[in-house]
Length: 188
Image (cartoon, rainbow, N blue to C red; front, side, top):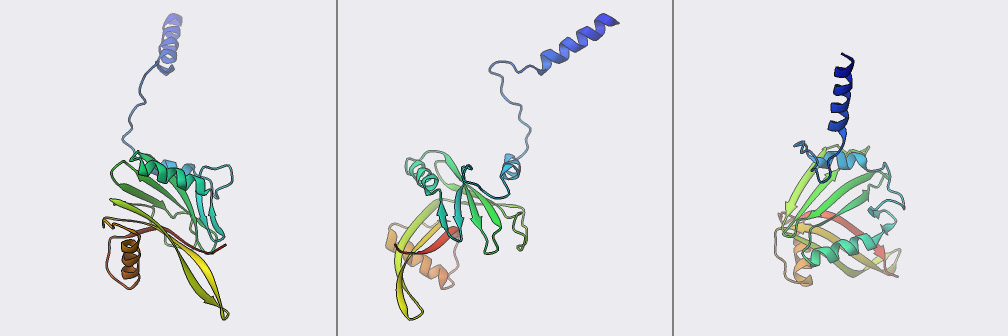
């Protein structure tokens, strides 16, 4: 009986040791919810999260690196922390598979919004457009940089076509556009 216990313990120990080159077991579960659960309540400077906040963009180098990977048609992803007016964070995971884009959004930390769980949107193209406008504030004209990042299945050829598309959507044209983030900041 004593030898049987020792044998069982040895078998259990051998079964718990990871074999060199062994592949992790597929659970069939979607890894996306676990990923969003692993993110902090609020992004910090140490986190590898591109932040679009009310006071501007933070860690823009992460966005630039992502766009470089996209330009090279490589598979890549970026985590985006987007803040609500009330200061709650909405996390997004933007994935490029080499052919198109998938945006996963988790708004469960938005205390004032309606939680939709994790949503998923897929589109063929990603557009990142920046342009200058002049706004009148308190009878003074000031320059602002407007930046829009969105996905669409529309194959827009140049900056003017992208601007026209944004204007049409703003005017109520139906589209498949998915806004990822938008920012308006005073020009320096």
